[in-house]
Image (cartoon, rainbow over all chains, first blue to last red; front, side):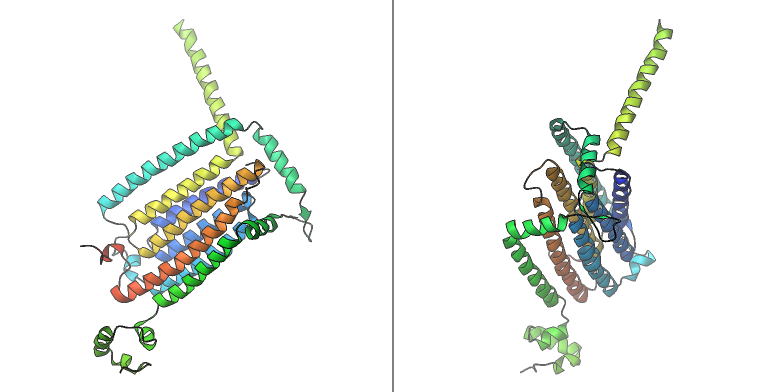
Length: 228
Length: 135
């Protein structure tokens, strides 16, 4: 994976910032801070995608994750606003024993993963005979061959084009299934997030439960359709 | 004899150290597949640690997003590696990443819907207080 020019520098900057922001996501006391750190981690990973010449995925990552999912997260955090966490009266981690056990598990996991990455990569590298400098030079000439953009200051890659081609050519059925999945997710989340009043107006509450709730909150009796 | 051999040993040691340092510098100056994989692995582990240790259910969801993102990073890195070796199926990694992002979005929508419903009924977001299935 040759990176030319200043790309290795950017790789390390964005890689380390992704890891640090990830750590802070897990360790921040305030959930809003967690969300903001997660956003910076996701943006750093998007930058790594650009370095790996996956420009379209990087754009999708920023649009969908940062623009969509994280905004959803922030809305929900505001909705279930919990002050105790910010004031520091609540413990943010599980009890000591569980944390110790899971951290030991994580260290074993990180050891195993890094060991297997090292070993597997040594095998891959044995097959690769071209030195990294040559590969980087090859990549640079390949990048030069792309069409120049209208302003003349940058190049236009063909990544979106090739990805779209192969997405429709080889993965059109999974693509359609994914759209159905999204539809189901939309309907499901609307169903799940209804209030009791909304459920009652859709006649979707068990009658006994509804009578109990009406005893507590007489407002409910006035929703449509009326109780028989 | 001993006196004369010690500086030689030290020099040898120094030489070996410098060679090692050069090697490390070379490896850092040319980040390859393994560096991407290591960053992906670390992000994954951080996500797992978050899921296992945090009490706030929303932060647990965010850690899951971190895990999925680490998987995406691995897919993209391998896709890049394969395209460099001229493999015709190199774009499969990018295609799969699109689907992972779709599933992550769906999962976040449903999961946050569940969190809202749970908060309405139980007035808590701490996972150790959500123990209806425990006996």
